[in-house]
Length: 196
Image (cartoon, one colour):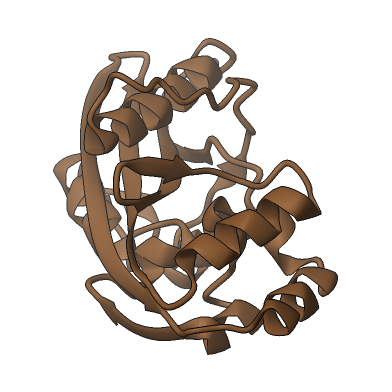
């Protein structure tokens, strides 16, 4: 069975490769739109599901489609990917010295049967206290610009993180243990990347 990642994220591709899966990438054309009236864990699952459904319409034959969406939540505020450097600066100044949550929604759909399993993972992250100059220096690296919350724990942004509680890979953008549990429900043997 084909395994398809409904995301252009190089980080998610790297993590699927790390899991030993053979897969192809068909990015979703679904716009990531935050709906304010949904609880955050339902929001990310809904966004992941929309990505999977968007790709499912374009796939012929049997396939397993994996979708994911990650958000950063500080208090009752959802922080997505910054639109520009000013927004990245505001996000990082809001997160520095504070605790926040990273939540990833997962959706895995088998087509053409359209059997779907969804889940989410939550990780608590504490960012170190940072000076204005440190935040500006980090933004100049360009790393914050395509990441929820304006930092990448797997890159230079890792030095900004004081501690985490929960799944590290969730903060990168794909909770691989949770995904493994879902793939087993579809009969995928992760260590060979094949359906059994």
